[in-house]
Length: 594
Image (tube, rainbow, N blue to C red; front, top):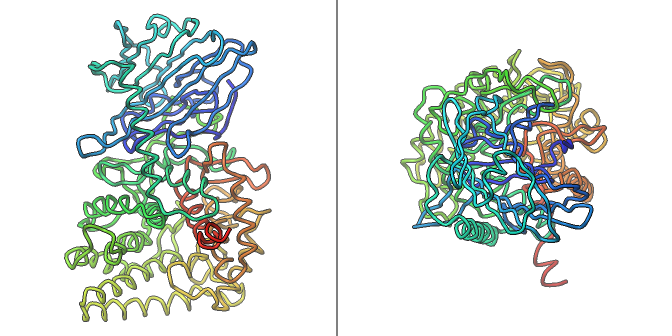
């Protein structure tokens, strides 16, 4: 099997999602939802031949794969040396039905001959319990049921079941259809259903894209990033996962393997912000429902399961050797026990448009404000208490500049909301609280000797997260201290055209890779201080580092240019959208005037 790395596409529907490589091999699918057991786990199986579904074309010579325009449907064409060819169409059904979104835990695959007489075999080699092969299966007349210890799932097909069961090569003379999903009878005609679901899914995505407000420049990149962010939103609760995978290492040999299939409040804020910028406000409204479930908790955690009551205690998956053999593979995330005080600001900033965006059908009111106030109280209380910070250090705590600044943002926005609602006393209270926090942050996070705001109060180390201070309103971009901070960042955190998070040793040693969204933070900072051509050039270069499908992971190796880290990373895709919308030329200038 060829190693395509993270040159993968995502198919999904807001309930489930899978990763497909350029030859049509499904290498990752957690069932029945984002945080479930990976039925297809080949991505993390090292050299072991398990955990995938593929179509093997005899004497394959070429392959081509891409998304169908403005959809989450992937089309792959495999061509043999003699010119025989087969087309594979992969998607997860999603469309409006009976007034609500239909999004079952299903994958659908249509395999059809497009030239000659292609000879293929279909291989289905599922796993359960994180990497243990499923050997217990039973074939029916039109299906195969795969039974694991804790669940079963079914492949329904109009293809030759004995050939699929035994991986027997056969000549494909007509289209065949495969449906992976719950172990239930498929009551409808599978051919008509797959064709109908494919067309309705295409229609759903093209209609969703049509309603986006996008910039003139880089439209295809923005659209693909937006669809990818939407695929990371678990519709049933409103939770937004940081990525769809676990344990893709941040760097080779690093041991930095984490499970990102959960909802970080910080990451979700960036996703909501990016989609709001495009006019896709429904994700924010759903996320607010998710937040309201959590708001009564005594202590806010930085990360939750997409169903908040689900345990995400960290453990090791013994039966998966890891991406390219790089383990360990982790299930769950110990960050659930950390203190990360920026979460309070992330929540309130994400909710704030509810009070000011007149497009929304259910605007924020005093009741919602009263729900948010206790979060502001905690922000004020913990602003200057050490925490693990935005980068989730496991071995130390400090008073991190970004965390304190986001606590300020929580109080500052509560003041604005209270004023908007005519609550003068509360507006005054929150404004005074915010002013006190801001004065201390700007004083104690500034290092005169370094000529920069630093990662933590009284610290020496630089950190890319302080580039966000003007973004949240903590300081004006033309303040000499911020301009100096940008210069210091370039001097110490730039690697080629990539930006490191920091360059000091952490729990695992010195960082080796650049964090992709930090480049977008620097781009935005340059734009703010007037270096707009530099910002555009660095942004355009960033687009060349997406994979063939237009997707980004968390990290990039500054020397090799290879993508690393969990995938696709919502932080990175949100950063792309926000920078593109900021840097783009206007429609008025380009469309109407030529």
